[in-house]
Length: 429
Image (cartoon, rainbow, N blue to C red; front, side, top):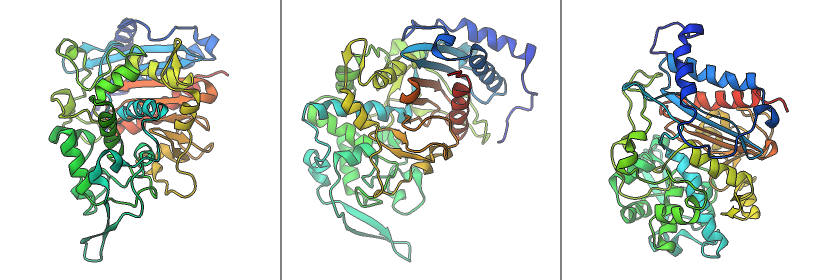
């Protein structure tokens, strides 16, 4: 992996300023869950200290500006700290209440909001997308002939809501491939939301050829953005408004939204100016500009505190502090594999650590031990964000982990494997 900095590995006295910075930022915000001594939760204090040293070293090498790490087990915080910088160029220390652009970790929030409508009988999984947006009633599937031209044929079945939630619609991201079909699509969720309003987005998607027949192949794309628009159609509210009412307010997620108000913008975490693996300038457009609609696939903002409460709700079977968001059976449905043997599973194509995973409703679900390079348990479920955020729940270990960081390049995949190694490596039971 290419390194920008040629400084030696930071250690000893070189790490001391970062460790001091780290320690002084622990109390940047009120604890989102009760704390407990690591030993009582089955963690080694020495093992957890390796997380401090790992991030301090990475920050010293200019590979990541900072990270807020929250680890909960049995519903209590074993570790909740911030290390490094909110804005390294400005020298602004990172606090635990820093606000991060979630990118695709937005998708899990959107699916949970949609599932609240499912529980009310207002959004059957086998209802069609065309029920809510009739322009999707005659979808075409594209194929590429020997001359490289696109030919189309009618879709063999409609797009169902279940397809939206599990990425089996055939709607793709333009940045996920180089075929002529990919080139017709916007590169990703936020890119589409900067360019179009919600209704314009749905009209545009309905006119494009699908990459696959619905219900046949897992392919990462605009499925959950379309799901968010279905939520808007059913509720008559923006996706942020519906999510706030149905999920975020119930969980005390006071800093989660699709836009950051002026009084909170000083808390937004910033990327390094240069991608440490490519050496190219990097930035996150969503930190500077407003989107034109609440894109359910990638446009929300949140904090580690808010997201660990959301994850703990799921780990608890749908409730937190006596407030219920989903039923336990719905959470089990969401976090079970929905691909089975008949749907082509391309989940591992998103990153090497996804080998051995299927996909549920909005989350990847580990279906077998081993195979994946990332530590965990059968039944753990997760999804991450392209800007560097990480989230998973391990029901077997009663574990919830959230990492908020700004590392939008390929290096983010390295951190996903490493944080799992550090967390599970710190366990003593």
